[in-house]
Image 1 (cartoon, rainbow, N blue to C red):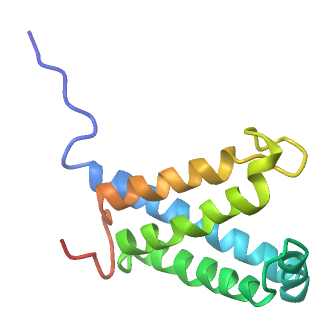
Image 2: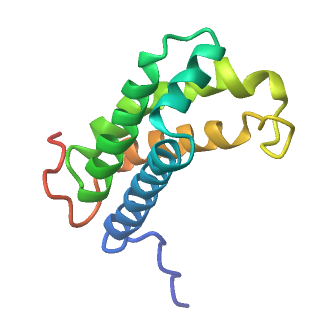
Length: 139
């Protein structure tokens, strides 16, 4: 009787991590672009202010989304970057989405999506940088 192959295999797991890493980075760039081109930086700062946060934190958030997204896509210390981006998403749960319920289709967006995004970042940090990383995280 043939033994079934183990999936993911050691040969394919780095490519799974690569796909996860690039997808996460692309979503961060999309959120940066939304703040830059749709809401505008000034509008994003005003929104942060309406939440009781310093408006300047909007620019820090945008920089984290841009630089973190690029680092993930390129594979530059991706495991460390993934961990560094988790507090950004947890902050959105605590400050913006937590009171809106679980499901993201709730009015104002629930905390489902940022929680899932946080978990996927943590998974990437656990499984590694993946294939084609320019500057892999040293173990």
